[in-house]
Image (tube, rainbow, N blue to C red):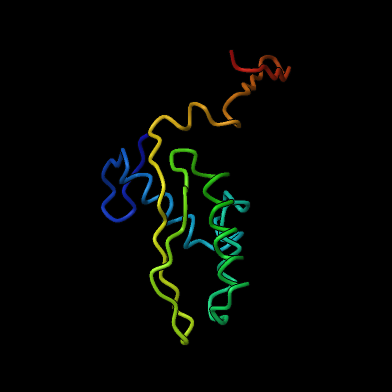
Length: 126
C-alpha cells in the first residue's frame, strides 16, 4: 500500500507508511475525522487519568483492538512496559510484526461488492 506523508506530502510506502497510520490511529480521538467518524482511539479519554493497572490494561486492550481492526499490515505480539511513574506517565514498547501484504488476507477484503445498473452484488473472494 502507498500513502502520502502527512508532513511533506511526498509518497510514503512500506513500514514508514504503517508507522504513520498507527500514529494517526493512536492520536486521533473517536469521531474527530470528518469522513471517517468511526475511526479513532476511544483511549484518548484516559489521558490525564492515574496510571493504575486497570487504566493501563484498558489502554492496551483499546490499542490492540484498534490495530487488529484498522491496520492489517501490523500485528502486536506483546506490550513491553518501560516505565510508569506517579505523574501518570506510561512508556511502553509495542513489539509486533510488519506484514506488508496483510491487507490482502484482511477479513474485510475477502468480500467484493459491485454495483451494476442499480443492482448490488456481494461475492466472496476466491
